[in-house]
Image 1 (cartoon, rainbow, N blue to C red):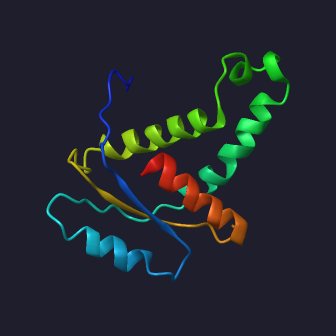
Image 2: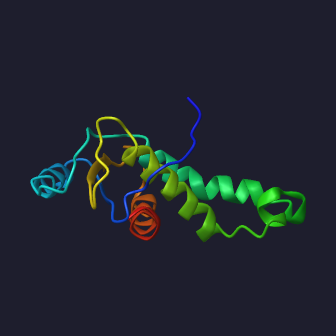
Length: 129
């Protein structure tokens, strides 16, 4: 089905953390609010965030010969659009809700090292939330 238009949640909340770190309790607590929605856990957000910076580097390594560089797309802009895409995907699901806020739970992949975890938190805070 072609995408004609999408809505985004203006104030999404993505709860991201290590396994067994309290993310489930936090997400379920937030979801008790009448304007919050909690979906099942996802394991794709963490690997996507880890790969996003690598993909940007790969897509700009030849300077002006690569589209991202040629168009002046910064890493911040690249990550922001990835975040908007994730937001739109969740907001526009039939079982989701288009409301002021929603909570979503995502545990980090087990292969992420501590620097990845810090970086993921920064990416999530700046681009998805």
